[in-house]
Length: 166
Image (tube, rainbow, N blue to C red; front, side, top):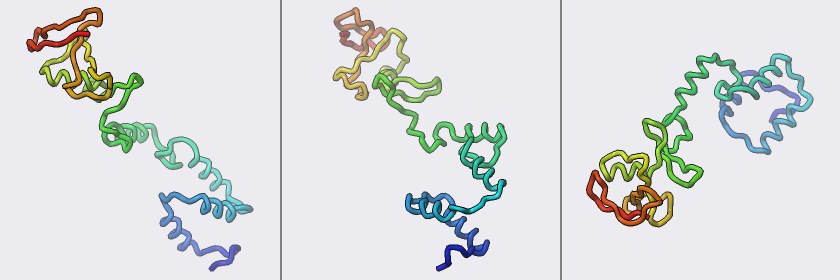
């Protein structure tokens, strides 16, 4: 084992640097590195590199990126290419599931009912969850409600199916 004060040859230091690249360090390992670097004098250039790497765009990892490169990186990381992509679905603040479509996000229960009816829903047509669970978008659990002021049963003018209005 090397004594603490002796430096390793540059080739070995570069090999160690390459093998550690991208690895997560344990707290104990970070503490050991910190202890080893105490009292060490860094050049102004090295201090500047360390400072630059800790701020700004993390995607460039301390290197300066042009605005064009940043724009390209944002484009590449959109939608399905992003590692945090969840299939274009999310739960909104009201508890409904929203699905990404060409026109933005749409509530999933409306898409399910549109597919079942074979047509687009009008603005004044609302979808009611029979069991009250907003994420249960099975067709058996959905019904069209025209207006909450109306009660009874209606017939859809397009598909001639009967629906209960609450």
